[in-house]
Image 1 (spheres, rainbow, N blue to C red):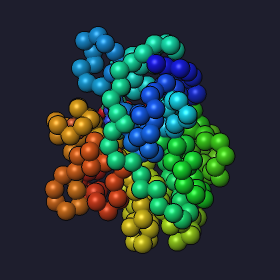
Image 2 (image 1 turned 90 degrees about the horizontal axis):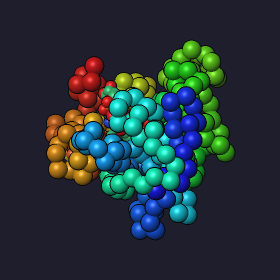
Image 3 (image 1 turned 45 degrees about the vertical axis):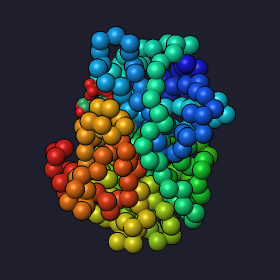
Length: 247
Ligand SMILES: Cc1cc2nc3c(=O)[nH]c(=O)nc-3n(C[C@H](O)[C@H](O)[C@H](O)COP(=O)(O)OP(=O)(O)OC[C@H]3O[C@@H](n4cnc5c(N)ncnc54)[C@H](O)[C@@H]3O)c2cc1C
Ligand code: FES
């Protein structure tokens, strides 16, 4: 059931869902849910969303309206129940040591739950404009926007030029493919080995049956975003090929 609904930025919503105890136990940072946004004929498939955070009896998702599925979801009222599959996929490996979180746009949607579970030293967030910049309380954050409406003006990679990479034992990265590839390319090699990316791919089933969510792997094969990921070691992905497919 939708316990709470809030439009946190124009066209960006936070939904809190009441869920069972069993569901909550498995709602680890980085895992996702497949939400049946409507019981009508559209859309045919459920829509995937990262579990943003969890409390004692609920989980939250944060999503942006980008098409008909998310528009339908945004129009759903508090108190209504929606069918949901999950928690699905593999989340972050919650290693000890200080973490650097790097998020582009809605890529930061999964960071509240992750930050609560780790030693988060710094979060770097980038967005096109301040209306697309998520804020997460209680975490040291540096922000950059493409139009300069909040924080520095420029791209996430501009802000990262000042980061001392070797002071972080772990890195979490989530955002558009081109942004993640650019960030990985600018890191020292040692930092790449401790980077986990939260991948997004168009999904059908969400549980490994349809192969709709394939991501080119570094070893020449393919990874299923839904069951091998969505959180993957940065070095497991063939970034050139993946970016090429989406260009
Ligand atoms: C594991 C996972 C976690 C996700 N977590 C979040 C989240 O926390 N918050 C959030 O806002 N969105 C998240 N997404 C993306 C979200 O699922 C899509 O925005 C949504 O399915 C779009 O549905 P739609 O019917 O509104 O749009 P559609 O009409 O299906 O598509 C509209 C536009 O969105 C693009 N799009 C659709 N699905 C995806 C996708 N999976 N990846 C990249 N682009 C897509 C399409 O190419 C098209 O340009 C996640 C996706 C995955 C795979
Ligand atoms: S979405 Fe069907 S296999 Fe991944």
